[in-house]
Length: 373
Image (tube, rainbow, N blue to C red):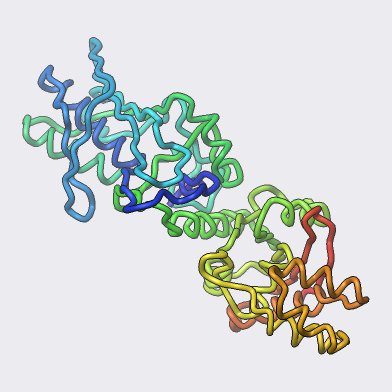
Protein backbone atom coordinates (compact mmCIF):
# COMPACT_ATOMS: atom_id res chain seq x y z
CA UNK A 1 0.00 0.00 0.00
CA UNK A 2 1.38 3.38 -0.99
CA UNK A 3 0.27 5.51 1.89
CA UNK A 4 0.08 9.25 2.33
CA UNK A 5 0.23 10.94 5.65
CA UNK A 6 -3.21 9.48 6.45
CA UNK A 7 -4.09 11.24 3.64
CA UNK A 8 -3.32 12.75 7.14
CA UNK A 9 -2.93 16.38 8.00
CA UNK A 10 -1.77 17.49 11.39
CA UNK A 11 -4.63 16.35 13.64
CA UNK A 12 -6.89 19.12 14.79
CA UNK A 13 -9.50 19.06 17.53
CA UNK A 14 -12.11 16.41 17.05
CA UNK A 15 -15.58 17.70 16.26
CA UNK A 16 -18.12 17.15 19.02
CA UNK A 17 -20.84 14.60 18.45
CA UNK A 18 -20.89 11.65 16.06
CA UNK A 19 -18.14 11.69 13.45
CA UNK A 20 -19.05 11.46 9.78
CA UNK A 21 -17.32 8.90 7.55
CA UNK A 22 -15.81 9.86 4.23
CA UNK A 23 -14.53 8.27 1.03
CA UNK A 24 -10.98 7.49 -0.05
CA UNK A 25 -9.31 8.84 -3.14
CA UNK A 26 -9.54 5.29 -4.50
CA UNK A 27 -13.33 5.22 -4.12
CA UNK A 28 -13.64 8.64 -5.77
CA UNK A 29 -11.38 7.59 -8.66
CA UNK A 30 -13.45 4.45 -9.14
CA UNK A 31 -16.71 6.39 -9.24
CA UNK A 32 -15.26 8.91 -11.68
CA UNK A 33 -13.93 6.09 -13.87
CA UNK A 34 -17.29 4.34 -13.97
CA UNK A 35 -19.11 7.55 -14.85
CA UNK A 36 -16.62 8.45 -17.58
CA UNK A 37 -16.64 4.98 -19.15
CA UNK A 38 -20.43 4.87 -19.07
CA UNK A 39 -20.47 8.15 -20.97
CA UNK A 40 -17.84 6.92 -23.43
CA UNK A 41 -19.96 3.86 -24.20
CA UNK A 42 -23.46 5.39 -24.07
CA UNK A 43 -23.08 9.15 -24.38
CA UNK A 44 -24.74 9.65 -20.99
CA UNK A 45 -23.19 10.31 -17.56
CA UNK A 46 -24.83 8.58 -14.59
CA UNK A 47 -25.25 11.21 -11.89
CA UNK A 48 -25.06 10.19 -9.14
CA UNK A 49 -22.88 7.20 -9.97
CA UNK A 50 -22.94 4.12 -7.74
CA UNK A 51 -20.01 1.79 -7.18
CA UNK A 52 -19.39 -1.36 -5.15
CA UNK A 53 -16.73 -1.20 -2.44
CA UNK A 54 -14.60 -4.20 -1.38
CA UNK A 55 -16.87 -4.99 1.59
CA UNK A 56 -20.03 -4.80 -0.51
CA UNK A 57 -21.19 -1.27 0.29
CA UNK A 58 -22.69 0.63 -2.64
CA UNK A 59 -22.25 4.39 -2.12
CA UNK A 60 -23.31 6.96 -4.70
CA UNK A 61 -21.25 9.99 -5.75
CA UNK A 62 -22.39 13.24 -7.36
CA UNK A 63 -20.37 14.35 -10.38
CA UNK A 64 -18.47 17.63 -10.23
CA UNK A 65 -17.41 17.67 -13.89
CA UNK A 66 -18.38 16.01 -17.15
CA UNK A 67 -16.59 16.19 -20.49
CA UNK A 68 -16.71 14.19 -23.72
CA UNK A 69 -14.12 14.44 -26.48
CA UNK A 70 -13.72 12.70 -29.84
CA UNK A 71 -12.11 9.63 -28.27
CA UNK A 72 -12.44 10.07 -24.53
CA UNK A 73 -14.81 10.88 -21.70
CA UNK A 74 -13.96 12.53 -18.40
CA UNK A 75 -15.73 12.75 -15.04
CA UNK A 76 -14.76 14.21 -11.68
CA UNK A 77 -15.68 13.67 -8.04
CA UNK A 78 -14.92 16.07 -5.19
CA UNK A 79 -13.53 14.01 -2.33
CA UNK A 80 -15.45 14.17 0.94
CA UNK A 81 -13.30 12.83 3.79
CA UNK A 82 -16.09 13.23 6.34
CA UNK A 83 -14.79 14.49 9.69
CA UNK A 84 -11.26 13.13 9.21
CA UNK A 85 -8.37 15.66 9.20
CA UNK A 86 -7.41 14.66 5.69
CA UNK A 87 -5.19 16.73 3.39
CA UNK A 88 -7.10 15.54 0.32
CA UNK A 89 -10.53 16.55 1.65
CA UNK A 90 -12.13 18.70 -1.04
CA UNK A 91 -9.69 17.63 -3.75
CA UNK A 92 -11.12 16.98 -7.21
CA UNK A 93 -10.44 13.46 -8.45
CA UNK A 94 -10.68 13.29 -12.26
CA UNK A 95 -10.81 10.16 -14.40
CA UNK A 96 -10.32 10.32 -18.16
CA UNK A 97 -11.02 7.08 -20.00
CA UNK A 98 -10.27 6.20 -23.59
CA UNK A 99 -10.28 3.13 -25.79
CA UNK A 100 -6.90 1.39 -25.98
CA UNK A 101 -5.43 -0.85 -28.67
CA UNK A 102 -7.04 -4.30 -28.92
CA UNK A 103 -5.52 -6.84 -26.57
CA UNK A 104 -3.79 -4.31 -24.34
CA UNK A 105 -6.23 -4.66 -21.45
CA UNK A 106 -6.70 -2.03 -18.75
CA UNK A 107 -3.87 0.47 -18.33
CA UNK A 108 -3.47 3.12 -15.64
CA UNK A 109 -1.85 6.50 -16.22
CA UNK A 110 -0.89 9.32 -13.86
CA UNK A 111 -2.38 12.64 -14.84
CA UNK A 112 -1.57 16.00 -13.33
CA UNK A 113 -1.24 15.82 -9.54
CA UNK A 114 -0.93 12.03 -9.26
CA UNK A 115 2.50 10.76 -8.27
CA UNK A 116 4.82 8.28 -9.88
CA UNK A 117 6.64 5.56 -7.91
CA UNK A 118 10.43 5.88 -8.23
CA UNK A 119 11.78 3.56 -5.53
CA UNK A 120 11.45 -0.17 -4.84
CA UNK A 121 9.85 -1.57 -1.70
CA UNK A 122 6.25 -0.57 -2.42
CA UNK A 123 3.59 -2.89 -3.83
CA UNK A 124 3.45 -0.72 -6.94
CA UNK A 125 6.71 -1.08 -8.92
CA UNK A 126 8.93 1.85 -9.84
CA UNK A 127 7.82 3.57 -13.03
CA UNK A 128 4.11 3.05 -12.32
CA UNK A 129 1.51 5.62 -11.24
CA UNK A 130 0.98 5.75 -7.48
CA UNK A 131 -2.44 4.13 -7.71
CA UNK A 132 -2.67 1.49 -5.02
CA UNK A 133 -3.61 -2.14 -5.66
CA UNK A 134 -7.11 -1.98 -4.17
CA UNK A 135 -8.18 1.13 -6.12
CA UNK A 136 -6.78 -0.52 -9.26
CA UNK A 137 -8.82 -3.61 -8.47
CA UNK A 138 -11.97 -1.55 -7.86
CA UNK A 139 -11.60 0.35 -11.12
CA UNK A 140 -10.81 -2.85 -13.00
CA UNK A 141 -13.96 -4.53 -11.68
CA UNK A 142 -16.19 -1.63 -12.77
CA UNK A 143 -14.55 -1.41 -16.21
CA UNK A 144 -14.79 -5.15 -16.84
CA UNK A 145 -18.45 -5.20 -15.80
CA UNK A 146 -19.36 -2.28 -18.08
CA UNK A 147 -17.41 -3.67 -21.02
CA UNK A 148 -19.03 -7.09 -20.60
CA UNK A 149 -22.45 -5.42 -20.49
CA UNK A 150 -21.71 -3.75 -23.85
CA UNK A 151 -20.10 -6.78 -25.40
CA UNK A 152 -16.62 -5.30 -25.88
CA UNK A 153 -13.16 -6.26 -24.66
CA UNK A 154 -11.90 -4.29 -21.64
CA UNK A 155 -9.10 -2.54 -23.52
CA UNK A 156 -9.31 0.78 -21.71
CA UNK A 157 -6.79 3.42 -20.63
CA UNK A 158 -7.60 5.19 -17.35
CA UNK A 159 -5.81 8.43 -16.49
CA UNK A 160 -6.37 9.80 -12.98
CA UNK A 161 -5.53 13.39 -12.17
CA UNK A 162 -5.91 15.63 -9.12
CA UNK A 163 -5.50 19.36 -9.72
CA UNK A 164 -3.19 20.75 -7.06
CA UNK A 165 -2.10 17.26 -6.11
CA UNK A 166 1.61 18.02 -6.29
CA UNK A 167 1.25 20.71 -3.62
CA UNK A 168 -0.92 18.44 -1.48
CA UNK A 169 1.71 15.71 -1.70
CA UNK A 170 4.20 17.94 0.12
CA UNK A 171 2.00 17.52 3.21
CA UNK A 172 2.20 13.72 2.94
CA UNK A 173 4.93 11.11 3.25
CA UNK A 174 5.09 10.62 -0.52
CA UNK A 175 8.36 12.56 -1.03
CA UNK A 176 10.11 10.36 1.53
CA UNK A 177 8.75 7.22 -0.07
CA UNK A 178 10.06 8.25 -3.47
CA UNK A 179 6.65 9.11 -4.95
CA UNK A 180 7.12 12.22 -7.06
CA UNK A 181 4.77 14.59 -8.80
CA UNK A 182 1.65 14.26 -6.70
CA UNK A 183 -0.51 12.31 -4.30
CA UNK A 184 -1.29 8.62 -4.25
CA UNK A 185 -4.69 7.13 -5.02
CA UNK A 186 -5.39 5.20 -1.87
CA UNK A 187 -7.76 3.03 0.10
CA UNK A 188 -8.25 -0.57 1.13
CA UNK A 189 -11.96 -0.39 1.94
CA UNK A 190 -13.01 2.77 0.11
CA UNK A 191 -14.10 4.31 3.41
CA UNK A 192 -12.29 6.95 5.48
CA UNK A 193 -12.91 6.36 9.17
CA UNK A 194 -12.57 9.64 11.08
CA UNK A 195 -9.38 10.05 13.08
CA UNK A 196 -8.27 6.52 12.18
CA UNK A 197 -4.77 5.49 13.27
CA UNK A 198 -4.49 2.77 10.66
CA UNK A 199 -3.35 4.98 7.77
CA UNK A 200 -0.55 6.48 9.87
CA UNK A 201 0.67 3.03 10.94
CA UNK A 202 0.48 1.74 7.38
CA UNK A 203 2.65 4.67 6.34
CA UNK A 204 5.26 3.67 8.91
CA UNK A 205 5.21 0.13 7.55
CA UNK A 206 5.63 1.30 3.97
CA UNK A 207 8.49 3.53 5.01
CA UNK A 208 10.25 0.50 6.50
CA UNK A 209 9.61 -1.45 3.30
CA UNK A 210 11.18 1.30 1.20
CA UNK A 211 14.22 1.56 3.49
CA UNK A 212 14.76 -2.20 3.38
CA UNK A 213 14.42 -2.35 -0.38
CA UNK A 214 17.03 0.42 -0.68
CA UNK A 215 19.45 -1.53 1.52
CA UNK A 216 19.31 1.14 4.24
CA UNK A 217 20.84 -0.15 7.49
CA UNK A 218 19.76 2.69 9.81
CA UNK A 219 16.35 4.30 10.25
CA UNK A 220 15.01 7.00 12.54
CA UNK A 221 11.63 7.02 14.26
CA UNK A 222 10.82 10.32 15.98
CA UNK A 223 7.84 11.53 17.95
CA UNK A 224 7.89 14.91 16.23
CA UNK A 225 9.77 17.30 13.96
CA UNK A 226 11.96 18.83 16.69
CA UNK A 227 13.39 15.53 17.88
CA UNK A 228 13.70 14.29 14.30
CA UNK A 229 15.78 17.33 13.37
CA UNK A 230 18.03 16.84 16.39
CA UNK A 231 18.74 13.21 15.53
CA UNK A 232 19.07 13.95 11.84
CA UNK A 233 21.76 16.50 12.64
CA UNK A 234 23.83 13.61 13.99
CA UNK A 235 23.35 11.22 11.11
CA UNK A 236 22.18 13.04 7.94
CA UNK A 237 20.11 10.02 6.96
CA UNK A 238 18.35 9.98 3.57
CA UNK A 239 14.76 11.19 3.68
CA UNK A 240 13.35 7.72 3.13
CA UNK A 241 15.06 6.55 6.35
CA UNK A 242 13.06 9.06 8.42
CA UNK A 243 10.02 7.15 9.65
CA UNK A 244 7.29 9.43 10.97
CA UNK A 245 6.68 7.36 14.07
CA UNK A 246 4.69 10.00 15.91
CA UNK A 247 2.85 8.35 18.79
CA UNK A 248 2.92 4.89 17.23
CA UNK A 249 6.05 3.34 18.73
CA UNK A 250 4.32 -0.04 18.80
CA UNK A 251 3.43 0.13 15.12
CA UNK A 252 7.07 0.84 14.31
CA UNK A 253 8.65 -1.72 16.62
CA UNK A 254 6.29 -4.59 15.88
CA UNK A 255 6.78 -4.21 12.12
CA UNK A 256 10.56 -4.05 12.56
CA UNK A 257 10.34 -7.22 14.62
CA UNK A 258 9.11 -9.05 11.53
CA UNK A 259 11.01 -6.90 8.96
CA UNK A 260 14.25 -5.93 10.71
CA UNK A 261 16.69 -3.17 9.83
CA UNK A 262 20.08 -3.33 11.60
CA UNK A 263 19.94 0.03 13.43
CA UNK A 264 17.03 2.04 14.82
CA UNK A 265 17.20 5.45 16.46
CA UNK A 266 14.14 6.50 18.44
CA UNK A 267 14.04 10.22 19.25
CA UNK A 268 11.51 12.20 21.23
CA UNK A 269 10.78 14.70 23.94
CA UNK A 270 11.04 13.80 27.59
CA UNK A 271 7.32 13.14 28.16
CA UNK A 272 6.88 10.84 25.16
CA UNK A 273 10.05 8.90 25.92
CA UNK A 274 8.94 8.58 29.55
CA UNK A 275 5.76 6.85 28.38
CA UNK A 276 7.85 4.45 26.31
CA UNK A 277 10.07 3.87 29.35
CA UNK A 278 6.96 2.96 31.34
CA UNK A 279 6.14 0.32 28.74
CA UNK A 280 3.52 2.23 26.70
CA UNK A 281 3.65 1.64 22.95
CA UNK A 282 0.96 4.17 22.02
CA UNK A 283 2.30 7.54 23.17
CA UNK A 284 -0.80 9.62 22.43
CA UNK A 285 -1.95 11.77 25.34
CA UNK A 286 -5.44 10.30 25.09
CA UNK A 287 -4.21 6.72 25.34
CA UNK A 288 -1.29 6.81 27.77
CA UNK A 289 -0.27 9.06 30.64
CA UNK A 290 2.99 9.89 32.38
CA UNK A 291 3.07 8.16 35.78
CA UNK A 292 4.48 10.57 38.37
CA UNK A 293 5.16 7.73 40.82
CA UNK A 294 7.26 6.08 38.13
CA UNK A 295 9.23 9.30 37.64
CA UNK A 296 9.65 9.67 41.39
CA UNK A 297 11.12 6.17 41.70
CA UNK A 298 13.60 6.88 38.95
CA UNK A 299 14.48 10.27 40.41
CA UNK A 300 15.10 8.78 43.84
CA UNK A 301 17.25 6.06 42.29
CA UNK A 302 19.24 8.82 40.56
CA UNK A 303 19.89 10.52 43.91
CA UNK A 304 16.96 12.90 44.40
CA UNK A 305 16.57 14.29 47.91
CA UNK A 306 13.54 12.39 49.32
CA UNK A 307 12.19 15.65 50.78
CA UNK A 308 11.33 16.67 47.22
CA UNK A 309 9.14 13.62 46.64
CA UNK A 310 5.86 15.38 47.17
CA UNK A 311 6.77 18.08 44.67
CA UNK A 312 7.37 15.37 42.08
CA UNK A 313 4.06 13.67 42.82
CA UNK A 314 2.17 16.95 42.62
CA UNK A 315 3.78 18.04 39.35
CA UNK A 316 1.40 18.76 36.49
CA UNK A 317 3.63 17.58 33.67
CA UNK A 318 6.70 15.49 32.95
CA UNK A 319 8.43 18.69 31.85
CA UNK A 320 7.89 20.15 35.32
CA UNK A 321 9.49 17.04 36.86
CA UNK A 322 12.42 17.30 34.47
CA UNK A 323 13.02 20.94 35.35
CA UNK A 324 12.77 20.25 39.08
CA UNK A 325 15.26 17.39 38.98
CA UNK A 326 17.73 19.33 36.83
CA UNK A 327 17.58 22.25 39.27
CA UNK A 328 18.75 19.87 42.00
CA UNK A 329 21.54 18.35 39.90
CA UNK A 330 19.69 15.16 38.98
CA UNK A 331 19.86 14.13 35.32
CA UNK A 332 16.68 12.11 34.87
CA UNK A 333 16.66 11.97 31.08
CA UNK A 334 19.50 9.43 30.86
CA UNK A 335 17.91 6.65 32.94
CA UNK A 336 14.57 7.29 31.23
CA UNK A 337 16.25 6.87 27.85
CA UNK A 338 17.76 3.56 28.97
CA UNK A 339 14.40 2.28 30.17
CA UNK A 340 12.78 3.36 26.91
CA UNK A 341 15.42 1.42 25.02
CA UNK A 342 14.63 -1.60 27.20
CA UNK A 343 10.94 -1.33 26.23
CA UNK A 344 11.90 -1.16 22.58
CA UNK A 345 14.19 -4.20 22.88
CA UNK A 346 11.49 -6.17 24.68
CA UNK A 347 9.01 -5.36 21.91
CA UNK A 348 11.50 -6.30 19.20
CA UNK A 349 12.10 -9.61 20.98
CA UNK A 350 14.99 -11.37 19.24
CA UNK A 351 14.89 -9.35 16.02
CA UNK A 352 18.38 -8.27 14.86
CA UNK A 353 17.79 -4.56 15.45
CA UNK A 354 20.17 -2.44 17.54
CA UNK A 355 18.30 0.40 19.24
CA UNK A 356 19.40 3.86 20.32
CA UNK A 357 17.17 6.33 22.18
CA UNK A 358 17.64 10.10 22.10
CA UNK A 359 15.77 12.51 24.42
CA UNK A 360 15.50 16.15 23.39
CA UNK A 361 14.15 19.28 25.00
CA UNK A 362 11.62 21.59 23.40
CA UNK A 363 14.36 23.54 21.61
CA UNK A 364 15.82 20.39 20.10
CA UNK A 365 18.86 20.17 22.34
CA UNK A 366 19.82 16.59 23.20
CA UNK A 367 19.35 15.82 26.90
CA UNK A 368 20.29 12.14 26.80
CA UNK A 369 21.46 9.58 24.30
CA UNK A 370 21.93 5.86 24.84
CA UNK A 371 24.41 3.64 23.09
CA UNK A 372 23.14 1.23 20.45
CA UNK A 373 22.37 -2.04 22.19
